[in-house]
Image 1 (tube, rainbow, N blue to C red):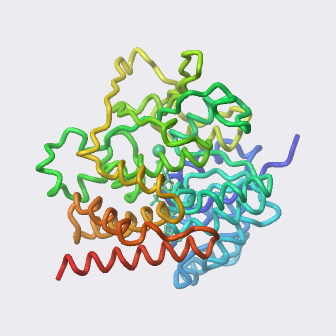
Image 2 (image 1 turned 120 degrees about the horizontal axis):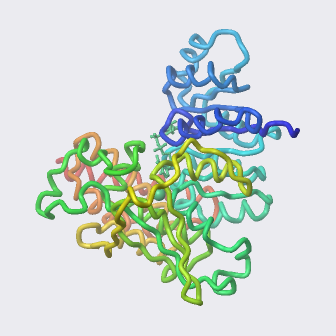
Length: 394
Ligand code: NAD
Ligand code: MG
């Protein structure tokens, strides 16, 4: 009997973090929690610590540390605070796997630290890869880390690809990767009404239950734009090798087509515990708590081409990828500012794409050669985006 693997869950209190702990709790013989982290959700993190008894609990927000210490008292779990502590628990030598499930750019440094430390990186934090794809993929290759995608589409592609694609997709006979997209809650909303949709409508995703930021990204389809960039990095794909198709039922999570005309797809209920269990146990298979699919009950699967007039964020993401350098970090930063403003009620829904486009025009040329320049592009894009918002409000 081998020792249980020690796991760090970055972003434990979020939607992916909770699903990860649900899967881990089903397999106490295989997995044990080393560290749990959150931004500042003290009550939720404290409850998770009582259940999973990690060695460390980290809150990024230093001010929340005292409240967490008070909630936990003296016990098995040591409380740490601040961004350096996130990096420390992501790269500690005892840790086997790191679930990278912090939302947004805040996840970049700890996710990258796990990659550099040679961990099995379970990557949900797609923004980290969008910001710093080359650095991230180089870190994985140099350290010998294992990168397993958690995003359901990329996890599906990973499952449908042959085991070795190091010589390139074509050499492996792969002709095309197709990412599926639900189309979100506004797939059929009249275009003229999009300006007035509310945050509550935008976060009500028809198929998936997710955090607020990714839910808004799904509604604008920026999520699929970020995922297109993510796929290009993860699978060393060229832009023309990655297709996007709307599939409203979210049952087929993505597909890989081969030179001989075969297309392989991965199917399942829209429940993130399936890709999480796949990545935790790979190449083994373990119970995730998700029911098997009943195709007769599903009945019908539909597919449509995405409408880029309705979803301009798709074209913006493709343009940022084509521009290269720091453009994708700028795209991501502008989008984070825009989504925050939309959720706060200070920017209309269609303003999200306008703000991202204006920011890309302004600073899409910035470089991204090393981590400092990636962070500088991120900071400058945020500043320009906030200035745009301030001008609009004036
Ligand atoms: P969420 O908002 O539910 O949770 C985010 C987590 O990150 C929380 O634990 C929060 O405390 C932590 N966090 C937020 N800001 C932080 C900061 N500044 N410093 C440290 N920690 C911080 O988000 P989610 O839906 O779980 O998504 C997490 C990531 O996974 C995102 O990158 C998202 O794109 C990706 N993802 C999510 C899903 C899904 O179904 N939810 C699917 C695919 C990919
Ligand atoms: Mg996805």
